[in-house]
Image 1: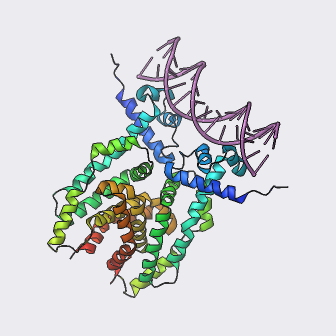
Image 2: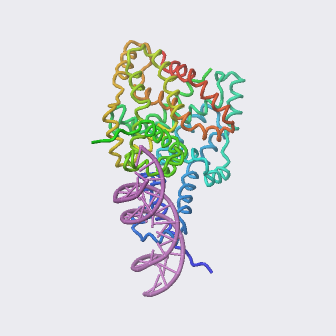
Image 3: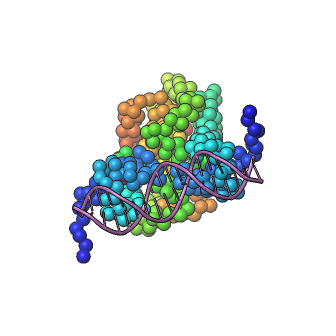
Length: 203
Length: 203
DNA sequence: GTCTATATTCCGATAGAC
DNA sequence: GTCTATCGGAATATAGAC
């Protein structure tokens, strides 16, 4: 009934779509742009994905699945808190460096009131930080760390990992430093962020 | 030669455009959407702004001019460092709370390779943090604060102010708390962020 | 200054040949 | 599985009446 699809062509399209979307943004990316980037005829995109929406949702879904599951796994896992923070921050900065488009996409998308596909991906991943919150509360009770709202701590960690990478060109411009220097600063942060957080909460 | 334009209608259009763009994103906002929101005929938009691009650039320029000049003024100003950090963080969080769309827009826009208008706005504002960097270096030399890369400090401050507000719906979803609770957390941060930063750098 | 009507451009989707 | 040709719809810009 169904002809076997060429996986390599399909993968090629997804990669091209991802690349163009990073450059031009989600909504500004046209089917023609993607076809041009992939070096194939535009109608082939319709053959493989039928509609524009289907292709875009596939790319978006891939983006979201690329880092989120591992992130929550580490965060809710069994490592001792300080060790967990060290592992998580380095891992998370690496993830965002590989996909600087991901947080930008997530923030943009969640702001749009009607984003059924985003909701469906979230339903699938089921993100939560319950394990982390419980652990922090326990460490506070044991007086290993100072009293701090666990969610504020979570927000601090994420913000110090994500926004520096996401806003890299902005920081580079405002601080008047060039791209290699900025890259080095972000590299340094892989170790520094954890040290900062720990200094902040250590009892 | 030129007929006097009705300023109030023009302002009405800009406000409507801004509101719709926050909800739907920059590129997804159509001229018709803006006209509907403002309750006026779509062609009137063309009368006042001639092209879609002109209108969008006007809105974008307004957004950028809304917080950036004050931000750099405070940052490079004459306040003692700790006091400056307290004033800046509260001021900046308030600015972002009033315009959560601003950082998202700036990050999106700077990622697009060809953004001549963004460049022109930047050229106009001339952002720099030289005063802040000099002050931090002086405080380090005086051993008032620990040795820290001034730009890393700047990145930390901005990230702790901006991303929590920008990613508010994401944090709310991941942490499993409702909107009012999240709003309260952000309110608390107006004081807490400065305290955290100061604890972090105090010698 | 505002509206109606129209022109134009662009994009997505599909049919049909190969 | 891929290409050519074409249809249909949406969105912007403009001309001209009031």
